[in-house]
Length: 73
Image (tube, rainbow, N blue to C red):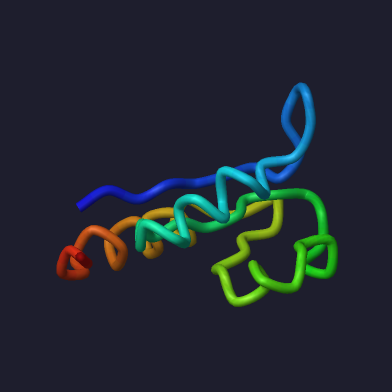
């Protein structure tokens, strides 16, 4: 099982299009960002959001749960 961690703000723009594609594919992902959850477009607001600074425990917990999920599709 794959998963992804996306920063919202990257060189060249935002990662919302990538996030929408991951959501459509059923790939678990979380936003890791200094932005606020309110900055996320409405269709993506149910996605896990880890606000910077986040802990190693937060990341480990998300990844462990994501890879333990059965594959979708």
